[in-house]
Structures are given as C-alpha cells and as structure tokens.
Image (cartoon, rainbow, N blue to C red):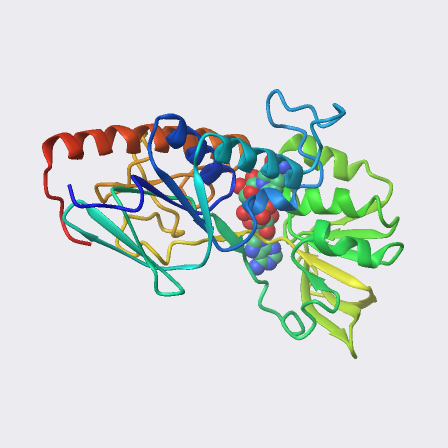
Amino acid sequence: MPQTDADLLILGAGPAGLTAAQYGARANLRVLVVEELAPGGQALFIDTLENYPGYLASDPGTGKSGFEFAQNMHRQATTFGARFITQTAQALHKEGDIFTLTLENGEPLRGLAVIVATGAKHRLLDISGELEFAGKGVSYCATCDGPFFKGKRLFVVGGGDMACDEAQFLSHLSSQVVLVHRRDRFRAQKALAERVLHNPHITVRFNTRLQEIRGEKKVSSLVLGNTLTGESYEEAGDAVFICVGTIPQTSLVPQVQKDEQGYIITDQGMATSIAGIFCAGDVRACPFRQVVVAAGEGAVAAHSAAAYIDRITESGAAGEAL
Ligand code: NAP
C-alpha cells in the first residue's frame, strides 16, 4: 500500500463526524478530521440539549448547551487519538484505493476511506430584504443573535423543530415572539410543538407567509400574507429568525447517489454508492435528523470504514477512479 496521511479521512466535525472520529480512533485507525469551523455543526445552535440519552442537561458539570456537548465530544475524540484540521476541503479524488482530499491551502491529504459528515446549511427564504438585512435583524440562529434583541418584537419563520426550538429560546429573551408558519399545523415533533403553543410569550400564526422584510438601516417591519384570504399586512418587528429547513452539503462528492432532495443515499452500513466513501449525519437521506441519530450513524460509518480498510489492505485490490 502507498503511504497515506491517515487511514480514515472524516469530512465535517458535527455530532456524526465527531462520533466517527472517536470510534475510528478507538478501532486503532489513524483518523484525520477536516472541518472549516468550530467542532459541533448544527448542534452548536442548540440552546438546551435535553433529548440526548443519558445526558441530563440539568446535571451540574455536564453542561447543557449543544456547544458544551460538542466540546466534550471533541475532547473525547482527541483523547482517543483523532487529529483535527481547521480548513475548507475543496476537492476529493480517488485513484486506485487512495483518496486525495485537497484543502483550500492546496495541501493534499491522502487516506484509504472517507466519511462524509458535512451536514446541512440553512435554507434561505429568498424574499425581498432577506439578504439586505442579514446581520441587521435577519438571522438564522437565535442562540447566536437572539441576545442582541432582548425585549424586542421578534418573528420566527418555519414550522419544524428548528423554528419551534428557536422560538422557545427567544421567549426567554422577549415576551413578544411571533411564530409564523405557512401551513395550519407544525411539522415539528409533538412535544416541542405543544410547548410552543402553550408558551405565553409566543404567538403562533398559522397559514401565514413572510413576504417582505423592510427597514432603513435595520429591520423595522415585516410584510405578512394570510395564505387563506390572500390578504397582506405590514407589522412592526425588530428581528426575524428564518428557520425553513436545510440544504445538504454534498459538493465534495457530486458522483455519489442522492435522493430527490439531494441527501446522500447509503446502505445500512452507511456505505455510499462509491466504494470507500461512507456517510453519516444530516447530509444523509434519513427521515429523522437528530443529534443522537447523527452520532449513531457516525459510529456505524466508522465501523464499516474500518472493515473496508481491513479488506483493501489485506487484498491490495485496486478500486475505481473517482
Ligand atoms: P424541517 O424539518 O425541514 O422544517 C422546515 C420548515 O420550514 C417546515 O415547517 C416547512 O414548512 C418550512 N418551510 C420550508 N420552506 C419554506 C418556505 N419557502 N417558506 C415558508 N416556510 C418554509 O427543517 P428544520 O426545522 O430546520 O430542521 C432540520 C432538521 O433538523 C430536521 O430533521 C429536524 O428534525 C432537525 N432538528 C431537530 C431538533 C430537535 O430535535 N430538538 C432541533 C432542530 C432541528 P412545511 O411544514 O409546510 O413543509
């Protein structure tokens, strides 16, 4: 076998990538994780992580936020020997059995297997004022930006887990939170949705679309539309948090098989349609995207990658080019 920088290259350090790193390193693989931001992925946006089994957010010492949780996972992975590089990965190629990942500084990293755990990014609403007022009242992360708008009139758009989570978080900062959703019911998990519906600081407006964001230097009002009557109206507001879903980050692996929404399809061992490329977490086609699911998939992906590496190093078989 030619020399490589790692046995296993992991793209992304969210809960899936961090768990894969830990399992890979514990299986005695040389693991290299490439992440462009801080470890944690979408979990960094979770204010209170209350549904990870065995992790009681109320326990002193464990920490309660997704940020603290991610830091613990990162520490655990490095303790077992996984290495991390903070860089943007630009291209992935396969020749024979060797993958080469090119970083933005031009450095090539060579490995025998790859786990794609690149997650998903926020979807834009694509309406007038959204880009113009980004950072000036338009936000995609209440945990990051909410504290700037304490006591203000805040809007949240969306009907999934993220919108409900963000509205809940904002309701601790302001008693004037308005959640607008285009349909007449939430997509979010029932427990979360019920909490929002019973929160006295949150007003829910179903059958409502955000049509335009207005202001001078920052957001001052929103134009909303009732989807049943077709009526539009303008209302004062200081900030709007847009939570209308996510887009899977798959640009490094254009050739792997995906579903109609662009999420990567795998078998039950997290193997993709290309030998040696595995996938885990929010970028994978899966009906339920949760920290615990991403972590579980990361463990399975690392296990399968280890078995794959065993097979190719024993046989020395040449794979296809990518
Ligand atoms: P999501 O579940 O896909 O929900 C997106 C929401 O935005 C839907 O309610 C959708 O409306 C609405 N929407 C989409 N496009 C829109 C548009 N153009 N205009 C207006 N509304 C639009 O996405 P998410 O809530 O961001 O969550 C992403 C993933 O992370 C999900 O799998 C979720 O379960 C997971 N997550 C879990 C937790 C948790 O467990 N605590 C927290 C956050 C996120 P429709 O309902 O009409 O389609």
